[in-house]
Amino acid sequence: MIFELHAKNETGSRDAFVTRAQETGFTVTPDVPLADYTTFKLGGPADLLVIAERITDLIRLVNLARGAGLPFFVLGGGSNILVSDAGVRGLVIVNHCRQIAVTGTTVTAESGAPLAGLARRTIRQGLSGLQWAVSVPGTVGGAVIGNAGAHGACMADNLVSAEVLDGQGNLTLWALADFAYAYRFSRLKRPADAQTRGAVVLTATFHLQEADRAALAEQAARFLAHRRATQPVEASAGSMFQNPPGDYAGRLIEAAGLKGVQVGGVQFSPLHANFIVNLGTGRASDVVAAMDLARSRVQAQFGISLQPEILLVGG
View 1 (cartoon, rainbow, N blue to C red):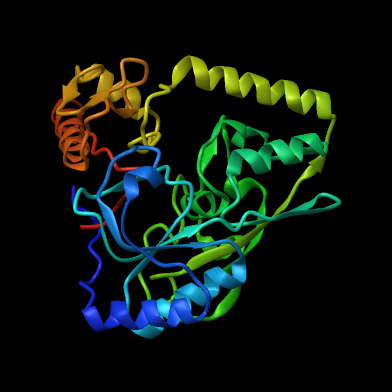
View 2: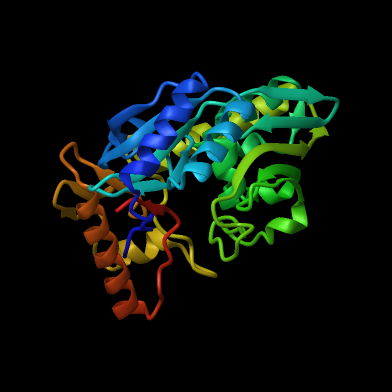
């Protein structure tokens, strides 16, 4: 397991960005602990951190970072990621762009909108298609990138298009097919070319179906009850590994004897073995050690290679 390393930033790049960003009206804060911004409640500091409240701000900050030659990472709800103990070099942009617009059965949400909040909004308006997400943490942008899903449904089922600032600085409209979606995967989750590397999701548009509000609310309540009964409440990043074809990562990890096992300051949850929880003193290195242990045990016992569902950031 390795973290995705960003190029080390030169002092000149950092200073150039800070100067331009402050001239534009942004507040840039140095050495901010990212544990406060992630659901795992661990990880080192960002060299620089700035909050984007509007899509125009998000675009401007990305362009300023690129213009200064400064590495950047856009952080949404802080779920489904593990930040290195060494933190993140360069700039972290916290995405607080959260506007939602509903026109008939078409819903457009900015990428920083909480996914569960979007689901609740559509339920209140009698629109079906996203109620599965009422129990899913994170933001719309992260969900689009990772093809988030639960209860047999996923983002790809209702996504029509997304506005993307691509890796070359172009404002583009991606159709559903452009993402090449698969199980918990998209082209943006594993960028492999100049268009996808450093690309940022700005908004996402969904086509939903009219439905009875009470029935939708009842279904959502069942999803929430299932989550409370089967998933831990302690600090975590959510499911650590993708389910392999025809099986479940949690079952395999439990069968390998790791359910409830503690590694440093983290633990394979006694409630669900595919969740690693922070016991309060956990470090990212503990999580990586636990993940490596799970992968080696499952590989040795079942011949199955577990693939991480979370993104490792920093270094």
